Length: 94
Image (cartoon, rainbow, N blue to C red; front, side):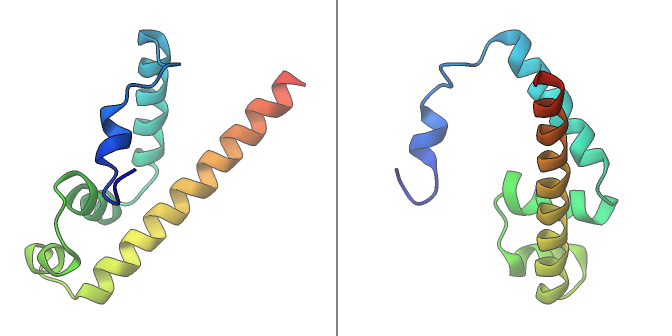
């Protein structure tokens, strides 16, 4: 795998079906909606638009440290919420 993940993105998910993809998109949207507007903006600029920390800070009129903190908090929140959703799903299955 390349360090920027290009290879992983180029390989289709063998388990993805239209219904599963739709469900995953719905869950992702819900998770993102749980973030603050600033956190969503930082993730959008950093991950989707592939902006550097410095570019993101400049565009938002803030410091690189504030961008790092917002990105860290957002990803941490997404991890916690996803972990909780998976735990609840596993409990329902057992």
